[in-house]
Image (cartoon, helix red, strand yellow):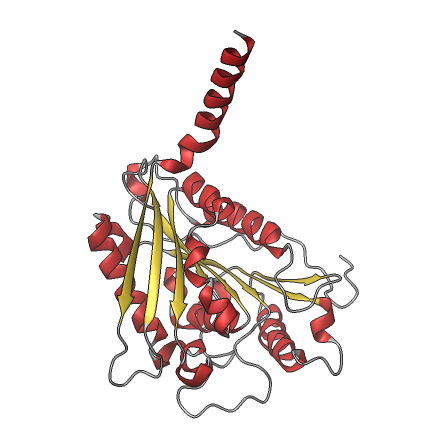
Length: 297
């Protein structure tokens, strides 16, 4: 009898733990590069909570440079912590796997070289495959690491009207001094609208040490961040202590950031008059500014 009760209790517990996320659907697609694109094939995966009749947005996580990051790129859509965040707000969760010719990830970190087009094309295909036509026009939360962070910030300059918020981990518009043979990174002053997009820049403290191989990358973070702060952009900078280029536990910060920003920017779906998905501007008088060099308020 005791064993039977214990078995029943375990089964009920598993049902409680697993049921919220098991009623979900996953769809994959592949985008072939256009003749004028620098990137190779791009694969995308989207996770959609089935119990959400109409999706309100997309959380997109862009992997970084190199084989290791690319190999795990699609699994960004399978992460249960991010799925929980997406489900809470009625969002889809999306990941990618972008192939770079000769492992030159600058072929896709500059969105105008084909990766922006691939992303938009994938959304159209996945909207049709999933039966969620609204995916083609809902706003995005963008997260990216390293090369993915560069892509994320440049996307914020290209599509500010579509982006709820962005979390670039270890990347700005470009590493300082980097030369490009195709499209060039956006200038910090090239889009006034982007200065209204909430962005939380984050990097590991050790990356910004003289002699570190990522120093120029992080100098590029400060280049765009400092410009934005001078022009009152709702941007913040988080320096991850005891960390270098790895993500470490910065996901905990990113998830909390999006969890707070989504309802602050996206209208309440309970009100029919808010169906147009116009992003709200963050208030400018309800914040504090920290000094990122001394970490004082």
